[in-house]
Image (tube, rainbow, N blue to C red; front, side):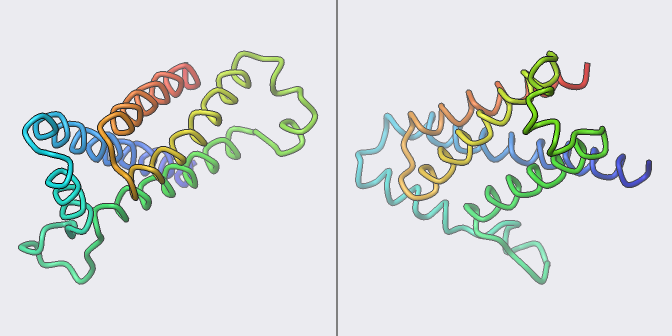
Length: 154
């Protein structure tokens, strides 16, 4: 039970990091997109993506690039989410047989998986070609996944 609670805790912390990461981009893009021309905006995104996290002022042996922080957070969410589902009794057999899709939990889970794949694709696009539309789509997808997550635990 302690490992399960640790996984839930890590999943929640990773969710907070992910939402913070997305909100950072939304606030940055929302405040600067109308003020900068396309080349200046591209330079800003490149600079931000290449910035290290945590800031250099903090003494830590390892620093991540901001884009790596997003990807690491997604990986932690995927792994802890998979463990939580396994612990709750979800098996590969129930997914393949189709019995999972007959209950509301399974239908919500499938919707969340579809959004997860979409989120990974959008994150890939944002990493290499950030645009305001993609970043807002990422925020919408993230908030939708949080809403589905609430349905899963109810």
